[in-house]
Image 1: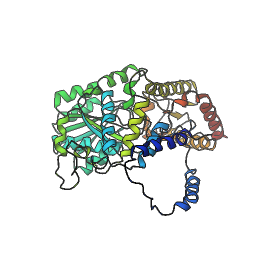
Image 2 (image 1 turned 135 degrees about the vertical axis):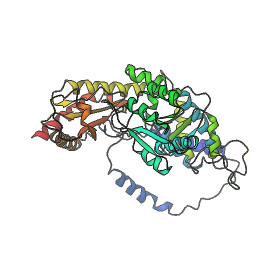
Image 3 (image 1 turned 120 degrees about the vertical axis):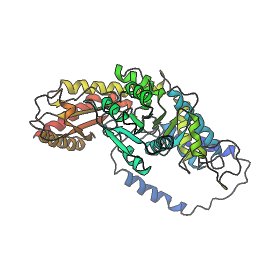
Length: 451
């Protein structure tokens, strides 16, 4: 069986337990229409869903899509029988408490016993809240991020009517700190987004240097660790990345996405602020929403209103089963992904057909195909991508600056700025033991592309 079924076996007992907890209510008959026609509709849903890439399978090594843990899937499904809304305690009393506990565990990853934070629908909205607070504290000042940072930061700055400045990167895709200091000297900078794991190559910005400049020039530092945040828990990073993670607790705000490496269903992001006093910017006085709760509720520290309580329940359950701490089962899975990336990188470095621009910092590997020109290399990469997919190996394509390859491919004469590369995100622990199979299929795809 390809698809996990334990969730289905465990749900009936859990649902019965939930019903016992509600036994003081009088029974009633649900009037949901169309129940007799559900089998046909669900069969069609299953048929339609099969028209997807196999995101759950180890041969899917393309984009950032990690299957949720069975406990997250089961807890999320169980919560939908209640359908809590974590905007206010009135809409999700139990799930709001679970959210606070789960968010506190995320904050503990960065060493923050005191914090302000909550779950969001994803990393984009979490980053929006961080930059909104930065704009409240430094109105009208610039937001800066690197050219390899997620494109959402420029969009968000536009939504917030804050000027945005894109900074260049070094040959490993990390923010150019000399260019950052030049911008900071103008006094126009309000907040810098340090990317802890870029979505293209998994690059980790040089956080100690960014924090040093922050102290010197007085701008805020927001860490977009939507992808890489959980790697705070592993011990097998290279020294330079490890040093950056050691300083992650010093930033003003951080975003981490449980629906990436946190084993959660979409959508589940999280925004955390080191200083709880920023909660004053969220303050509002609704005349009707909060009539039965006197405690602080999550709607008072969130720009989003209705939010799925089921996401909080799923994350809480996952933390109970697999605590997000160093040396545990959860961090062991991340370490396995990191080992898989290093092993793939080593094989690519030894293969004369491919060029690796640099050793991966997390679990994302990118490589180019050797050819006489950038355009020929890009065309070959596209053919290999297609041939691999025909063999059920699903990679990704990424446009990267040709300068990334200058050191390892000095004979290349670039006739254009960018090169189309192949990319693998090895975020499933199973990838480590599937690496021989993956490389064998890559070899087949290369040969077919040259036939």
